[in-house]
Amino acid sequence: MKAYKTLLQKPLTKNEVRLAVQVTISTGYADAVTISRKMQIGFGKANKLSKLMYAAGIIVDSTMRGTVVILKGEAQALNAAYRQLNKGRKGGH
Image (cartoon, rainbow, N blue to C red; front, side, top):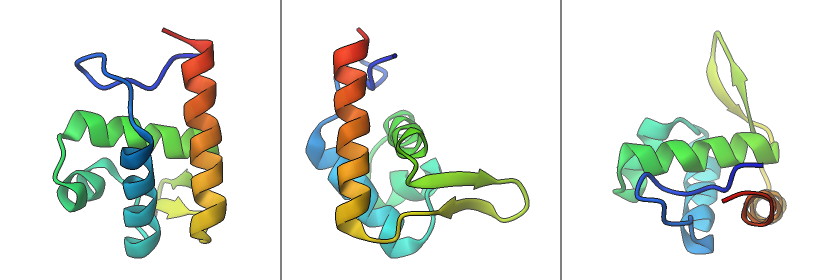
């Protein structure tokens, strides 16, 4: 599995993942543009966070309505995101 790193090859931090999950749950939107604007980070990092949440099962793509948030509970979503982040760290470079 590929590690979740930014464009500059720095690994994503737990704090960044936590903030992205909070933004996603509070706004109901999980696209990279919303995450980028709310967290005031670059689009590339926001896109990586969005992909991490998709792989963790927090969000799913829906072609007609945009991205849909599945896990609405913050604690459950954070646990899923952290598990996915750790999987990425163990499995790839």
